[in-house]
Image (cartoon, rainbow over all chains, first blue to last red; front, top):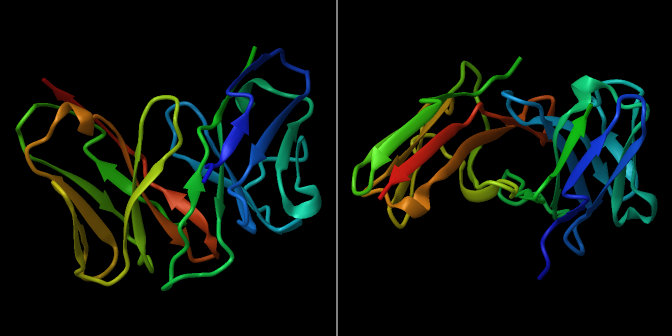
Length: 117
Length: 112
């Protein structure tokens, strides 16, 4: 079974440009999450989709970030316009719908390293 | 605000040595997970501990959840170069059980 995939693996853009990151979750996983790690900091939650609906976007930094999951399959995260502080590694994770035994196993993609110059 | 602090931040040891990594919080977590991350990859789940005082073993790795469910430890016996990586603990936020709080990470290097 294929794991979570993310594209691109690296992106280098200039301040003010737009970048779109893509995540393909594990097939059949209704839950999809975006996380981010900026240099020297811990991984932080950005938002959570259940199918195509945003369940929790409390971690989104500001309105320059837009996440979509049309059709409840893959998701995109657009940053427009990008700022220097947006640099970091963006991880996508997915999990099954069922909450098993009180916890939720999230499977992570390899991440997209974004560098804003 | 829930925080997970890991110690040590960095650890460099010789092959065959034992080590323990700690994950501490002032908050109670319903569960804690341990991940290992290697360069260019995402975190990979190693184990989930759910019950206070629980001990789980995964080959040479032993995970323990504190009785009060505020802390956890990872002990590696006879470390090998293949254990090298970033070890992360994480737990569900009280503000949203699908929202994970991650620890600061312990970067382990095992020298041959």
